[in-house]
Structures are given as structure tokens and as C-alpha cells.
Image 1: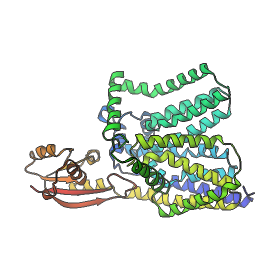
Image 2: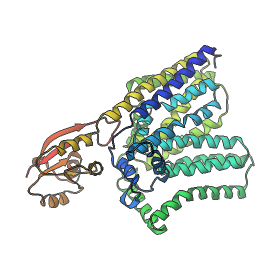
Image 3: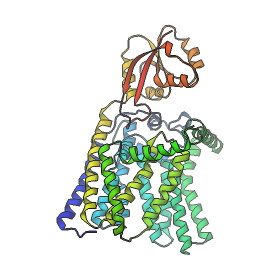
Length: 487
């Protein structure tokens, strides 16, 4: 690494601090006022009545996330904005473990530069700015990784308890991040290899880990009225996720190599790292090119952080490929942040001149600008489902709207018109016959569902209006077409 002058260090610190602070201020100044998806409604409703059977929220309940939202509600009235505030604040705390991890590989000045580059990742901030548990979970991921590295550097003792505790917090916020548990295997394998722990010690820590997990799982069992009720809910949810609607490899007919393409090039790179921005894509391409030419100058340092990050990234990538919905890019965010962290820290470590520092500084500035634009747009532009609700709410003629999943949001908005969720054509025909005195409307998702079932309803529908919002904010329902049923 080049020897930096005092003025250069001040500039680096100023750029990093300005980027981080500007992002946080932008988030707090305009908390996203919209709830635009089924899952977001689930979390928001749980703030007023926690009931897993009513999917408030859906299984497994995410109790620590809801608890965080309830604590934040002292400062924000709306339930979904309280969840957002919790996301913003706890994700801001991730700067600390990010810096502490980068500091093991870099001098302090460039370590804060690396931390800022990861923190300002634009697509991550979009998800943090939604009432979903990913934002809080990603913050805990960084604390969890730091705790593993810290426990590895110290002897067996109280520090070994910390990653076990944080892993229970992580799963109580986002159960789908369970592959991160491979980090505990990584830690205890190293302790075993270094003869710091034996079978008895390993069993002890497994029991401690189970005790930490039992805190939130036991609380859920109590809220659901007993162990068997909880198991019934668990089996129902996992069966639906892996076999019906979860978009996993077993429930989605997508060919294997097409699935890999969607995961790697679309979700991880175009959405996750580039944030659907050509400008950021060009900068990251330069980062990649400079990494390739800088390897000959590689400086040996502590490899535990890199090895752990790579292990977690691979294990989660396998999980995301087979057990997660590849149609939702937010599911790959742990992979995205780990890639950015490893790329930026490697570049700053391997590149001995100032070019690497300059490029990372440019990346931080670019991501801050893109992120701020996204955050402001997310808080200022109505989602397509809101536009639909307002349009039909202004109609004078009594009507009934048949939807696919949009009705969950319409219920949350307490829309003044009748709306029903329908999946099959036969049920639709039977139900609409009850409303001879009303106009019948359908959303495009319902029409597509009927077509998938083998029914061509083109002759019986008339396009009324199309509602648009940004795909990066709402990948599933960014375009809603409203049709009128013609008898």
C-alpha cells in the first residue's frame, strides 16, 4: 500500500464519512411510506396483532424483527415505517463490524474506505428501505462474521458464546439465512484442529447454541398454543415453500442452467452488485480489471476473514440456487455484500499505488448518489398497486375486482371497493355470477393465471388501464394491467 500523506488520509476519511452520513440522512428524512407486496403487509400487520395463523407475519414469525419494529414505534406511528426505522438504524450499526473486519486486512484509513464501499451498496439500501427483515438480518450477518473472527483469534471462553448468540438473533430475524451457520462449523473446526476444544467441549457449545435458539422458538410455541400447533404451521409453510409457491428448484420448472444464469448474472451482478445501473456496472468492471492486474503485487495478510467470507458465500449460493426463489433478487444479498467486501478489500490490499484507493473512492461516491436517488424515488413514487387502488376507488359504479396477490395490499389499504383473491377459472365463474349488478374487473395476473390453466378469456376482457412503478422497487407487481370483464 502506498504511503499516504496526511491530506490524503483526511480526504479518504471525509469521503467515507460523507457517503455514510448522507445515506443515513436520506433514509431518515424520507422513510418509505408504501407497503407494496404480500410479505411487506404480513410484517406490517404483525405490529398490531401478532398471529402466525393469520400470516401476521408468515411463518416462522421473525420475532426479533417485529420486536425491533415495536421498539421503533415509539418514534414513528405507522407500523411499516417503524419496521423501516429499525432496519435503517440497525443496518447503520453494521459499519462497525465492517470496519473491524476490514481493519484485519488493511490500515485503518483504507479500512473505513472499504467499509463505506460495502455499506453504500445501492440495491441493499433499497431493500433496507422496505418493511422486510432482510435489512436487519444483513446487519446481524456482519456482526456474526466479526464475532466468529474475534472468537477464532481468542482462546475458548466467553467470546465463543458470542457467535452462538448472534446466530440465534439472526435466525430470529431471518430464518432463510440459516446457511450462515456454516460459519460456526468453520469456527469449531479450527478450534478442534488447534486442539483448543474436545468432544465434550463441542457438545457443550452445541447445547449452548440450542439454548439460544430455544429462546425465540420457545416463545413462538407458546404464542401458537403448544408444540403440535407449531409443528403443524411449520410443516404447512415448508411444504408450500418447497413444493408449491416458493420458487425453489423443486417447485419451479426452470431448467438448471437457466436457473444458474438467473442467480449469477441477473440477480447477483445486474441487480445486486450493479443495482441495475449502467454507471455502477462500468465502475465495477474497472474494479474487476484492476484486481486482475494487481494480483502480482499481492500482500500476504490474515487470511481467516477471506476464507470465512468465501465459505459463507459458497454455502449460501448453493442454498439460494436450490432452496430460494430465483425470481426475487433480494434473496442473494448476503452473496452480493460478501463479494463486494472481498473485492474491495483485496483491491486495496493488493494494489500498492493510489489507483486502487481512487477507484474505490469513486465507487463510494457513485453508489451514494445512486442510492440517494433510489431512496428518494422509493419514498415519492406510488407503487402500481396503490395507483390501482386509487383508480378504482374513484369509480362511481359499484364493482368487484378479482386479483391474484394484490388483494393483500388492497386489504391493508382498506380500499373502498370489493376485491377478491381468485386462483382458478371455475371459481371465478361461479363467484362472479353473484354480482350481476356490478362491473367485474380483473388484474393481469389473474388473466395470466387463467391462461396457464388452459382458458383463453381474450374475447371476454377489455383492457382498461396499465399501472407502472419501478421494477427495482417492486419486481413482481411493478406493472399491473386492469381488465374489465365483458359478458
